[in-house]
Structure formats: C-alpha cells, structure tokens
Length: 441
Image (cartoon, rainbow, N blue to C red; front, side, top):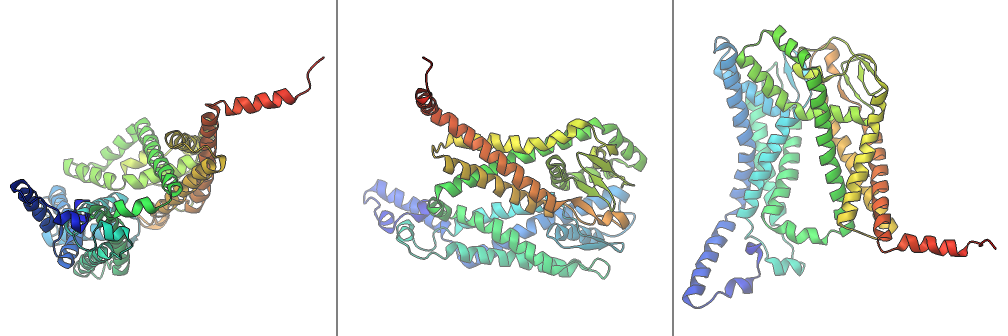
C-alpha cells in the first residue's frame, strides 16, 4: 500500500540527510511501481500464456524421445502436440485420429490459472503507482488502473492463444479458436485481473466496502469447498489403494517401459482434479458415468468395457453396493455443519437470523460453485461409448445446494445457541417457563 499513500505524505520527506535517504528509497520504489502501464500489462498477459505453453511443448518433445527415441514423427510434430495440449486446457476441442476430444484436463488449466495469478500480481505491483493515491480513491476519485491493466493483460493472453491455434492447427485436429479466446479471457480477466487488483493494493481499499455478512458467507463457502475437495481426494486415494493390484495389472498388460510409465503418471496428475470432481459427485449421491449406458453411484454400479488406464482401478465393483455406501451422502451435511459452526465460533453473531443466513448462503454458494466446476469435469475422451463420460451435473447442483445449505444452517444455529447459552440465555428462558408452570400443592 506504500505506492498508494497520499501525495502530501510522499512530499513530506525529511530535509536532513536521513530524510534524503528515505526520499531516495521512495524514489526507487515509485520507479518500480510506476512502470509504463500499457506495455507492462500487455507483455505480462503474453508471458502468462507463453510460460505454460512452452512447458507443454517441452514436455511433449521429452515424451516423444521417451516413447520411441525419435524413431517416428518429428520434433515439429511433438511441438504441435504440446501446443494442442495447451489449447485443450483452454477449452479447445481437438480431433485425434478422427476422434473429437472435448474433456478438459483441469490440472493443466489450474496450472495456467496459477501462472496468470503470479504474473498478474507482479503486473499489479509494477503499475500500482498509476492513478489516484489512497486519499483520492477514498474520496471517490475514479481509478481506471486495474480495469485498464486487466483488459490489456487479457488482450496479450488472448493474442497468444489465437496465434497458437493458428500455428498448431491442421486439417485433422482443427482446434476451436473461439473457445480458446473465451477461456483466455476467463483466465486472464478473471484470475489475472483479480491478481492485478491485489498486487496494486486496490483490493485492500475495495474489500472493506463489501458488507461483513457477504464476506463471512464467502468465507463459509470457501472453507466448505476446500474441506470437501480434500475429503473427495481422500476417498479417491482410499479407493485406489484398496484396488491397487488392478492398476498394477493394467500397467503390466500395457508392457509399458519407464518412459511410457512416466508419461502415464504425468497424464494422471493432469486429470487428477477431474477425478476428484468425479469422487465428489459419488459422495454427494448422484454419481457419474464412464461411458454410454453406465452409471457409478452409492446405490448401484453398472460398468462396461473400460480403457486401459490405471486410475480407473478406483472405480467400485459392478453390482449392488454395500448398505453403508448410502450413508456417504450424510458427509456433505456434516461437513457443512462443521464449517459453518467453526465460522460462527470465530466470528460470532448472536442474532438467530444472521447466523442462519450466513450458514445457508455460504452452503448454497459452495454448492453452486461446485456444480459449475463439475460442468468441466467430463466430456468425450474417446470413440463410441467414451463420448459420454462425466458426473451428472444437474443432480450434483441439487444435492450440493441442499446438503451444504442444510448443513450450514444447522451448524451455524447450533453454535449460535451454544454461544447465547454461554451467558445463561437459554437457561434463564427455561427457568422463566418453569416458573410459570403450575406447581403441585
């Protein structure tokens, strides 16, 4: 926030030698935070897009050498494969041997979003000296620094995406540049723009304006989602470990060497967030499908022929499921109640309606966000039956907002009741009711 201090404070440096030293330090700081906005933001967006793109291309070349030691194909073909991987992470469908792949490797998308955040934060720091200072912003002065920087950041990011789609495109693959632009704007504008706001110090000025109830509800939603994803990951890991022999058998049947196993592990890491969302859908109750005519849920599992992919060993056995699997649907309610209760304990409000609204709004918000993320978990991953793979998104939305919402309300109200009773409120009311009851003669 030093770059947003008021102008009088900037001019109020001491006239002594010590004050001059501080003035020199402030001058260097202002030079570092007042870099040209247009080239800094535009190049930052291009770097945020180009970094993961170069990583994907490098990994593709390494994978090409590991699989056949360069015996087939060419380095340019490997680079094109890496570029297509980056494009798929940005929502572009791509055709592989005539098969249209629409599934999104969320792990790679998250890597791109993380890079956009890091670079965007640095861009925000570099342009934080532009625009009005903190006093003028507090007085209502218009500050276009963040919107302008975020727009230029998005333009630089999208240009890299369009150029990549144009250069890597072939008649067979035919990536979708429109979807690449939309996802580029979503990542660069949403994630990168938010990072610019935080890096420039503007978020510290804007956030206190948001009502406390909204911020507390967002905190409940964030903690519910974080703990729920951790629980879904644990459930996935337990299921995989319990049937690890099946995964080992798949690898042995593929006769994969060390290079192929390394690539398989890399692909598994990239789709691990997808698998976590599949596990989330299973725990919520609706389940998911792994091919046309199949279903995996807590009540019944119907499977068909599956690809030779080790992570699929985590799928439950086909047929009717044990009785206790139905009780897994209670976990989201208990989790939401726990989180809402913790937030109520840390940030107490003694009004019943405020506690209930905070817990309910946080739970419903978490359910909506979870459903939106689940939309991108599935898609076509192969020919025939594999064109329909993914969770049941609408059912996930209904189950999530119901389970998290009810749990949030119950947890918040229980802790609110305990807090009010800490001062004897409940006991005094019960005592008053008891005094009004007729006594025995």
